[in-house]
Length: 258
Image 1: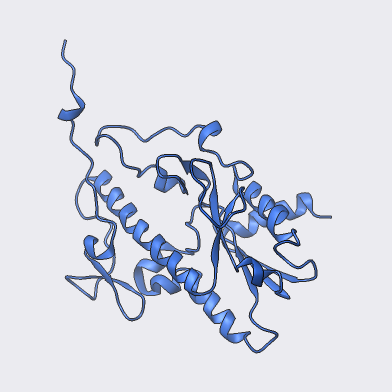
Image 2: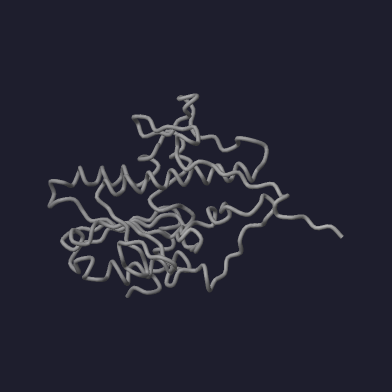
């Protein structure tokens, strides 16, 4: 009888975690372009092996998420981790981030815009495809929207507060100590190219109070938006639902709101 050692199996490729390392740069319009061909953007199919293409895409998405997170913070937002309700990232406890106006500012806002994204998108990203093309890191995300709202309403009792929900990243990985989408979960690093994706276990990888997009929406409204420690009870709320984010919000509202 023969058996094959792990050392004999082909390894998964490990891609760089920077745009430059992946062969891209960000131009003056915040568009992501190839270093070798500045007129061209992101390319998914870099070879004939589908797994390699998927891992390369996830490495690209990691860079995108980091840059979008940085730009949202520059626009005046910060992360709030749930269900712990802390701005410091928890360790070894299931959690996920949402983005909000800093608490000391949010409580004083007379208007608060609540944004509920699609259930398969990363936090703050409205369309990876548009982001990879002409939209760039601001047009394919909520960065430009927040900047435009802040500039247009700056003279009208000040800019509003923001609460950006995260209904897409509901799977928690202990190895990464991070919440992620199902797409990112299946692109995690594995011992070899022949190993199947890690199984998801409800009792380990679910985030309490955030096991589905609808439950996530309800939890954020209960613990943050309807909480006077975060949002003034007299503040006007404007809810923006993107794609199935609108359907999920209406489903929660019709079930739990009088």
